[in-house]
Every structure is written in structure tokens, then in C-alpha cells.
Image (cartoon, rainbow, N blue to C red; front, side):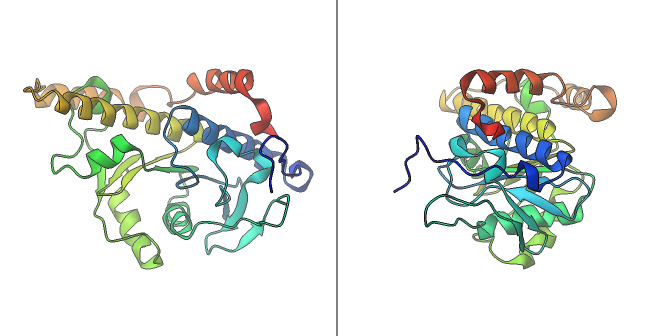
Length: 262
């Protein structure tokens, strides 16, 4: 039996570069934050980050809760799914990498070298909006940030690498995508950027479901105002998302439980 109060994965800090170690700390922090803000789904779903300077990425070990993930517990794999570095898990269980997680995340990491992080969730709000023909409505200032969000049609559980080309094509140059009848996906040039998009997209979905549940007509915003608001969120008119909030979020995690850094 694994005792959750004492179970620790031996540190990998001495086995990786300083750049990879920092990426591991930030990714572990992102997992903890996804859980903290109620966007996790037991051991399912994934957040991944490209290993700096390598054709490889870090992803969660399939079998760990997000609240358990540490810098040393992350799996390092290449774009073909080969495990390059695995943690030394306590006990007899040796966790691997979820197949669907590999297919989705490796597709984007292989094709989009301008991106560092990919996040995918199955939240109740995200899944609910993913089933609506109307999609995500630009009915709040926050949701207008995603007024031109990408969409990917459901074709069963994503287990076949043949799905990868379509995933990349449907994402296009966007930083967010609704996987229809499935969930949400965001990407970013940094982990803070991807998490910021995920948090705001989740909030947009929750707000829409709440408004639609009132069974009352919703106020529609004029198209030109939606477009203007959307443009105000674009990279060329503002500082990168996450620059200000990420340090504050790390301080929050450090107050709650700094073990993600191990």
C-alpha cells in the first residue's frame, strides 16, 4: 500500500539540466493550480511542456492525482512516445503515460515549436459547452477573448495517431480550442500563458452555463464591439498573459504546500 502522507518520488534534480528542472517546477505548479481551481478529473487529462532545447516533453504519470504531482514525478517522453526519463516510483507500481494524452500533446509539440505548453481538461462547464451547437458565446468581456476560438469535431477517444494531423489543423494559430463533445484545450508560449488561457476559458464556460440556466433572454453585444474587445486581448496590444499573475500564484502554492518543487 502507498501511504499518501509519506509517499515521495526521489528527486531528479541532479539528473536533468537546470532549464529542465525549472520547467518541471513550473509544470508541477500548473498541475497543482488546475486542481486548486477545480479543473482536474481524478487522474485523467494532461498538461505538458516542451523540454527546453530538446525534442521531448514532460507530462504527468498516469495514475497520480494532480495534487500529488511534483517536479520529479513527471514523465519525459519524445514525440513518438518513447520514455526518456521516468521517476523511480515507490512501491511496486510503475506508472506510464496515458495513450490519449500522448496522441493529443505530442501532435501539438511536434508541429508547433513556437509553443511550450499544452493543457487539456474535462471540466463540467467545458464539456457542457462542447456539446452546444452555439458553442462558446461572446456574451461577457472574458469570453470575448475567445471570440474566434478553434473547434475540433469528436471522432471517438483520441487513441490513433492518425488524429494528430486534424488536431493540429483545427487548432491553427489559435491559443484555445473546444474539442466538441469532449472538453477544452489551451496552448501557450509559456506555462503561465497556457494556464491563464485555461482559467479564463473555464470561467467563460461557467458563466455561459449559468446565464443559460436562468432561462431568460441574454443581452447580445454588437459585433463590432466584440471584435474590438477580442483585439484588445491579442499579443501585439498587451503584455504576455501570465507575467504578472504567475509569481502570485506560485506564492499561493508555496503557502499551501510547496512540495510541488521537490
